[in-house]
Image 1 (cartoon, protein in one colour):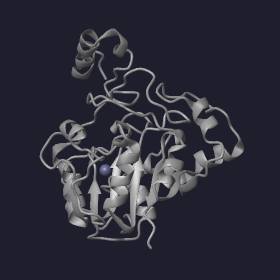
Image 2 (cartoon, helix red, strand yellow):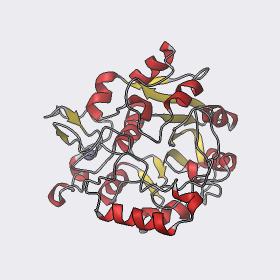
Image 3 (cartoon, protein in one colour):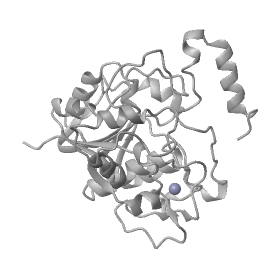
Image 4 (cartoon, protein in one colour):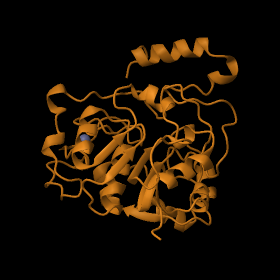
Length: 312
Ligand SMILES: [Zn+2]
């Protein structure tokens, strides 16, 4: 993208206006690029043409496939990164597809189940599709995602006990001050046997607060930088926890590797990450071919925690 584009201009303005101690942590979004690939207007209506998330995808026409909207082509748009590799039809980025893939692989087909998604990044067409498949509670029906990100309080969820079958919560928990209180609330609203699929940025091996104030691009403060030790915290709160990763990542960890062999995106600390994996169990959800086809690369960027509330 151009260095003088609107995002660059806003970022530069923020850099000038924000106090010195915070400047270093300002970033327009978590990722290597500010490139936003707008889907062509004529191609954005896809929800009605996609069946159940658990239907077999049609034979892809190209090398890569979006498992959400079934677009297929030669490559995704933008860099190979969890925050990029955009689908030109639905606008999904790679971590959107990984979360959806984990749902497809790990949740029994359950059309109509009650699903709560906190601050989905994707827009109206995705939400329309989800509302067609599920009894779908979305945290921001009519506000911008930025407003919703601060409006949602996982620490005090306004829902009945045992009222939700599936919670999808991508990149929200790091913005919640009291992790334990949020986990108790999610556990409370889940039905026994229900599942939370949780994504947070894992940029380092062990959980710690940011060393200096940190904000994501929508100005929401980051209270926690989580590591793999979050799995133990999830288990302490009554969940049966599985740490879902790609085959490549699981095999690298098992091999005892202590650093990524290649360039590492600046916000990730690969040495800390590999160090933090010791003693933790990872479960493969996507093999190498699936990771390539759906864009779950590079492997160190993809992780979803599957957290089941046990049945009595
Ligand atoms: Zn798509």
